Length: 121
Image 1 (cartoon, rainbow, N blue to C red):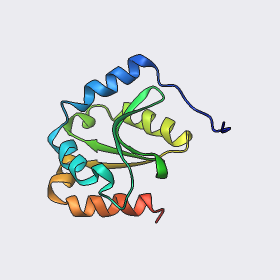
Image 2: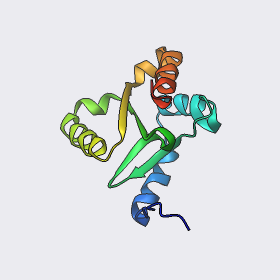
Image 3: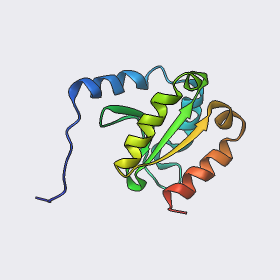
């Protein structure tokens, strides 16, 4: 048995995360197709992954990387996003944010930026 600490995800938070996976936004769906099945440098990504009391859009455990795709709604919840980002960073996660437009217009650049973050560059 390993001494690695395992965190149990609260069942309600897990159910919320699963429910969020189905109505993905078009930008999330486009990015998911690019990074799923270890398509990006062999790194495994999860979508709508619970971390603490938050559910992040995408997560790469190997790099402790949180990826957020921000749509128009984020203009109205800047304070919430700031609190969330601060908490995640305090827990040792790296957060990278892209706007929907970035995913649609520059998917190759978004993928390259993610790969570099995952590789620690």
